[in-house]
Amino acid sequence: MLDDWEENLAIITANRTKGDVLVITHLGDCLWKEKNEVAAAHSCYLVAELNIDSYSESARLCLIGADHLKCPRTFASPEAIQRTEVYEYAKVLGNSQYILLSFQPYKLIYAYMLVEVGKVSASLRYCQASIKVLKASGRAPELEVWKQLFSSLEERIRTHQQV
Image 1: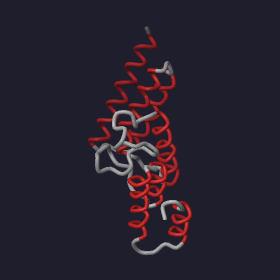
Image 2: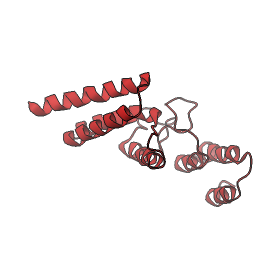
Image 3: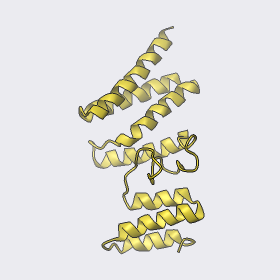
Image 4: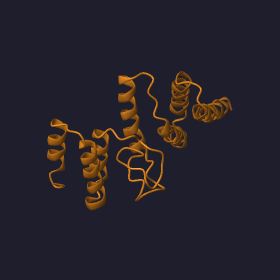
């Protein structure tokens, strides 16, 4: 079943039944644990519509295509953050109020990454876009924290650009 996972996943999704989310999730778990196929496992999790979770050892999906269990210090790569950003954008297209709260720390990390490689203006625009989305998403305490963190980086970038 694991060697033909794409075909099996297609068959399961084409013939939805009660409990198929558990089957798809189990397929993803097996692909990850037995074959070390993180991207394939994440594909299954996304089809099963599992949530993208905050980092933990029990999380199945933190960043799309990144192995947070095997590489806990390096899994937050620019590519993994960008893949997850595309997913978030697709969800926003379906629901303009959608916000992926567990993804906000990685967006902040990405803004810092941009600064580190000299893309200061891009980081500033990224912070401004993130702040705009967070402001439109309400006033929950956790949203306020992320607004403050992005605003702090934005202010530091602006100060740096004036020097």
